Image (cartoon, rainbow, N blue to C red; front, side, top):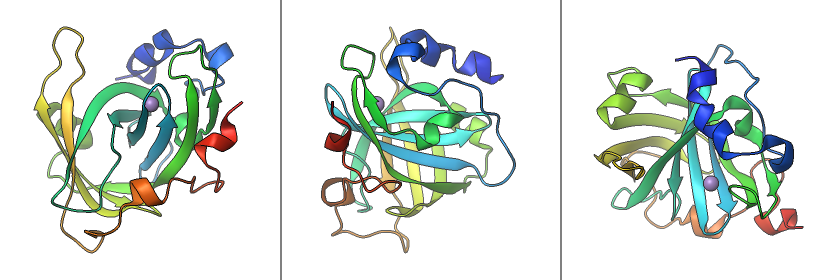
Length: 192
Ligand code: MN
């Protein structure tokens, strides 16, 4: 699907001239796809987990953030695709705008699709498997869809760490490492 169509929800929800967020200009380049997890201190604190699929970032909102413990399942609500330029966005979004609050790049890097299917087919099937190459997170994560959206509800998925060398039952990075991997900044550093 062309990025213009995939990003129509993103653009419809925002006034980009006021929010300071990226528009949809960047095109995908070759090489490994990117991922980003943004700590978004908005009406409620959550982590936005985004995977590059083609020329957009497929996105989930994870209220408690990712875990490194394979026995923990984290709720992940599918949200609108975001433009590729969002991959390094951090800053303040004015309080009166959609998503108003502060954003830091909590983790970022590249990922490998470790499913038998293509990333697009995995999304349709409701079972995504990726191997993350990040700074805070590494190794395989699964995303499993548990119920389809209906009446405007968001699709519910579960984000689960696979038991591999990136797993750690004691680390609690979503709690103990809140800072940006790009700037070292905390959300409150972007508060007006
Ligand atoms: Mn968000």
